[in-house]
Image 1 (cartoon, one colour):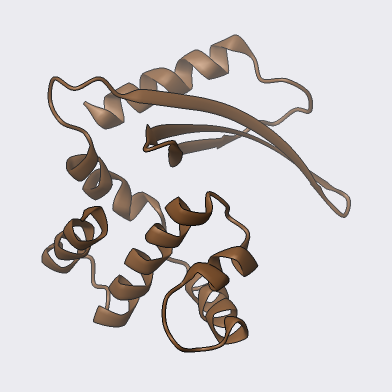
Image 2 (spheres, helix red, strand yellow):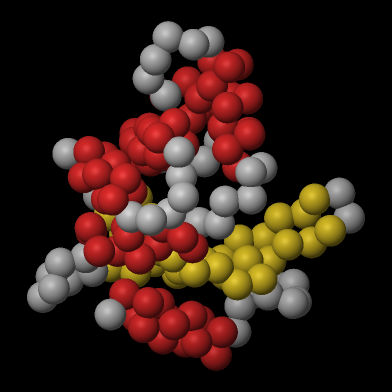
Length: 148
């Protein structure tokens, strides 16, 4: 039901997305909720349809390298998921990755929906180690302003 509602909302919004991209995005969201993973191989396996897993995998790679910003969808998703007067749960998470010699330290804020965190805001921290309380408070304030 959520995917159908989201698809209608995306079609009505003036985002400049083709029918095929909207369809893939809705299938991708369903696969994300189903697999609870961001691993493209797992998502490709969860996408419905006849094509082979490798074909789905390449389609997802093309989708993510197309330069489409996730921020385009945040307000649309919030409009569909957040009901006035209903309690929402925000999730604050920090992750560190090392890509060859580059260190990535990200602080992310997500909206918890049916046990899945939908990312709303992310910030690259310019230091290694844990995030500072001031960064966490700033992100929570920014997230609340985004939602309300």
